Length: 578
Image (cartoon, rainbow, N blue to C red):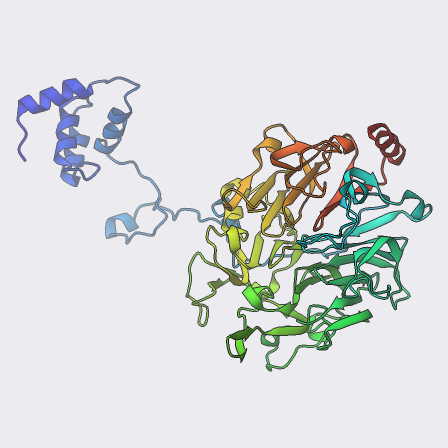
């Protein structure tokens, strides 16, 4: 297209540019700058007239029309005979050092080696134990209630100290509950106590009855102090100071991990820990020596029909039913046992899981077309925090010594988006939650994981709470991690959070506790005349200003574990509130 002098003058007046600059811009034909001949002619021409200093477009055109200065390039160019004789030839641009990918990739270099510290059991110190919700575990989740049932006698509608005279000298150090369990356990002075539903001997060694009303000590065959515990729908797990695990209760799907098909484990039995067959070069099961010495369990968590554990090195183990991919084995193993009846694979002992995947680039590794791409150095990934919902698990990577941001993983049932992958699809292998790998989390990566029945939560290093999934019968599900604005906008730093069957409870480090959801039995803790549900976080006035170190939501009840610090102040405040 030919441009007349009138066009040039008109554009020069409108853009505030010299005529020569306008001609150069028109001759570039949208290529971003003039041709080489135009550059040479512009270099030999007298300097253009001054234009407005604040004209960004004029600055861009002037830079393009001026002769290029001697700049360096990040790519080596072939040198001519004249250029090779130059005393100062162009140098290759300085490249970023390897391993500095964290500047552009918030998750760091995926192929780089990550160094982790040891994983130890959760240390909470001694404290007080309070409970809100139902005491009669027999009626929870059942349509028919006994004719003699009276809510005012069996429901604790505000957080209440649980049997304070039961632990006069032994302070509670660990508490266990889960969204699918109607029973609970605590550890005080190295001894395990259990209460709640016991129809399937989940409180091992105690008389099989529908409800154990008060915390009762249980006999566990160990000479070491117990340090950690976990409970599922019908089974329970314990860990002693030597890293040895024990299990009791319902074992139809192998969730007790005692390497037997006995349906009910009436007394505590030692847990058997195996390893991933694929991790052994010979194809046989790897031994403890091949995993770096003795396997010592550090953390355990329970779903409805499966169990998850971490050893002291942060390695992942699972046992139980493979339905929905709950064991993270990469398959469900479903098969027909009879007409119109399907069963799933079962792991009768803890088996190591060493494959972690991402969906960012699916199908690039042989055999991974259905489960995503296996992460580099997958077998070296270590975890520090695990939590189980009814049929899913969320885990957080252990802290890296080099400061690389931690990642979050999820697997199992994807109902209501509780895995955080924006789809309602099951995941058969631990998959990275992409939302926590963005730039916003480069300095505020995940720290703790917690699960409700069909929802999930993550607490970041800055104390921000993220939620996804669904915990109420009404309303829409949250398909990806979303920050809880009511807490973040008011500067609250969340210390602990837990989800129940239809409830969520969070406690901050300055003594503020909030809850929301549906609490038919008073598990929200709003008081005798308080509401039974709330769509948004609402203050629990009965425990206001009390420092809560750990909160656990069960099925129909909530446990508050108050730290030993400021014990006298905590007791005084509690008496004042009640």
